[in-house]
Image 1: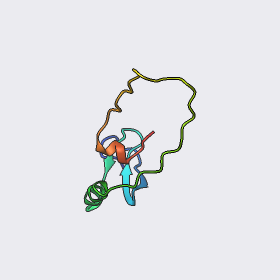
Image 2 (image 1 turned 180 degrees about the horizontal axis):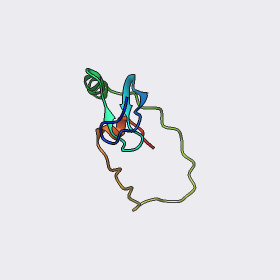
Image 3 (image 1 turned 60 degrees about the vertical axis):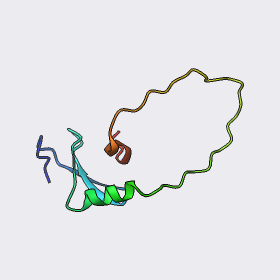
Length: 82
């Protein structure tokens, strides 16, 4: 299938049990009927958090360090296009 935007061949991948088509050139994402509903349904289910591993205490304090919030929407949380 070709991308409707730029005509590049779409790549099919599976994310969270849902097959999606995306364009590697323009990074557009296309969903078939019902796939958006599956993504939304799975995004509201609680995800078990992994156990925190003990950190090595080097004596270094990162107090005052602020992480920049990653830009993007809920699609970028589900799909990793990098």
